[in-house]
Length: 265
Image 1 (cartoon, rainbow, N blue to C red):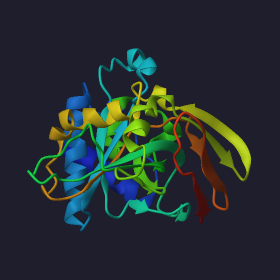
Image 2: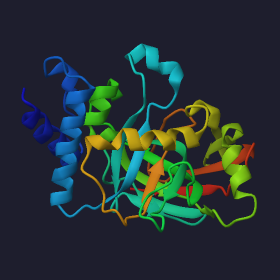
Image 3: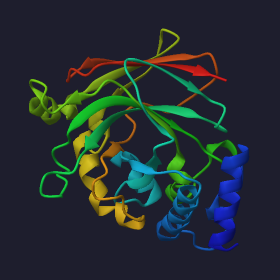
């Protein structure tokens, strides 16, 4: 199967919310290099449909699983104006566009262009807690990192909670302490998972700083565009169903506002 065939199959699976076989089972020696070519082609197809790139997602940020997959760095994929939602403390989201959605709790950053036209990836303009809704178009969520990159990097949606801006008191101290952040995820008011930001490359800020070295796989954003970056999950992925109410709360390390998400059909 050619890379063009894989692009068509994955786009159809996304459009019609069904599964297709993972590329690693369909194409010879399908590795990350080939996966990024497929991912970049899918990115172009979405842009042709009117999507605008809004930033990036970082995945596979837990180093403990890297040896299993032969990884030496995380993966990256685009997020879009139609998939990113900037929310207050309460948000709603329909699950209609997704095939097999799961939820992740992540730290999200905003990076804006500086006066000299550059971006300082070590000094975000804002940070927030967020939910990434990840979606997989392979049977049973069976995949490798290369399969993940090819499947839109598993990105479905990103819901960003209340932002803490750089001008806020203690912002730099909070950024520096992100590796100590601990969160609790609740489903319908009952504990569902706990997570630590130290599982994200030691700190979500470290995940943010990997993006400049990975985004070359995709065509660039307009220089003046603000960038949203989700940095990888702190919690185990959990499947979703309409009618559920999910909430993330900070339980230690860094003071960040919580976020509650209600899911619709």
